[in-house]
Length: 329
Image 1 (cartoon, rainbow, N blue to C red):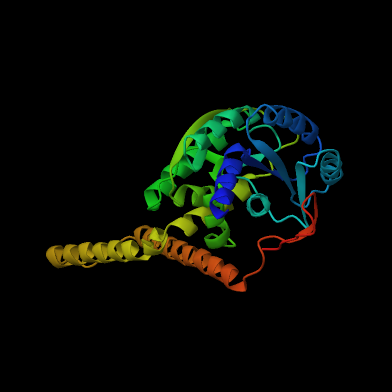
Image 2: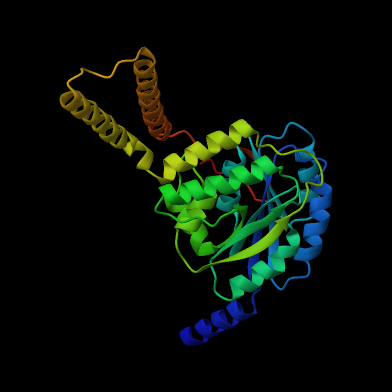
C-alpha cells in the first residue's frame, strides 16, 4: 500500500504543471499597468507552466493600487502585496520573492522596459537546469549617454574592487529558482543591499540572456542621479572593504613624500624646499585625502548602524489573493 502511494505521488508530480512567479515592483505606474498586464498575461497564457503575477505596490501615490486590486478581483492568478509606505524598489522585489510560491521566479518592472517576450526563453533555461538567469542589457533606449557611460564605469569599478565578479549591464530583470529564493529569504536580509549582486553571488548553475531595454511606455524613471550615486556607493561598501585600505596607501604615499624631501634637504644642504604655494597645495591635497578617508569610514559606520537598528525591510499593509498571511520583514 505504501509503495503504491509513493508511485502515485511520483506520477502526480510528473503530470503537475510547474509554477512560474512573476514579481513586479510598482510605484506610481498607473499609466503603464494596463498595457503591462495585457502584454504579460498574453505571453504567460502561451507557456507550458502555470503562473502567478505578484504585484508589489511600493506605496504608490497615484491610482496604481486600485488598478491592481481590480486586476486581482478579475483574475485569481494576480496577487497584490501593498506596503504601508514607500520602501524602495529593492524592498519591493524582496517582498515579491518572499510571497512567491513558484518553482521559478522572475523579477521585472511594470514599465515594459523589461520585455515580457523573454519569458519563454527564461522558461527554457529553467528546464535546462539553470537556477540563476541574469538578464543583460545590450541597449537602453530611455537612458541618455551619461547614464549609459556611468553604468559601464560603475561595473568596471565594482569588478576591480570586489572579489565578486558582476555581469556588466546586468539589471533588476532576473530569474531565480525556488532553491535560490530560499537562500535569499534565509541568508540575505541586509537592510542596505544590492539584490542583483546577491543573485550573482549565491552560486548555483547560472546563465545570461541579452535583451534590449525599450523606452518606457509611460511615466519616468524613479532613479535620479543622486539616488543612483548613493546606490553605487552603498553597493561598493557592501561588496568591498578595499576603500577602507585607502588610509594605508595614503600613509605610504605621505611617508614616501617625506622621505623625498628629507633626501633632497640632506644632499643639497639648502634647507627645505621653499615656496608658499607649494606648501599650501600639498597641505590641501593631504587634507582632502584625509577627509575622503574619514568620509569612507563614515559610510561603513552608517551601514553598520543601519544593520544594528534591525528595522524591517518592508511593512505590508494588506494583500489580495494571498489569504490572511501578511508578512513583515
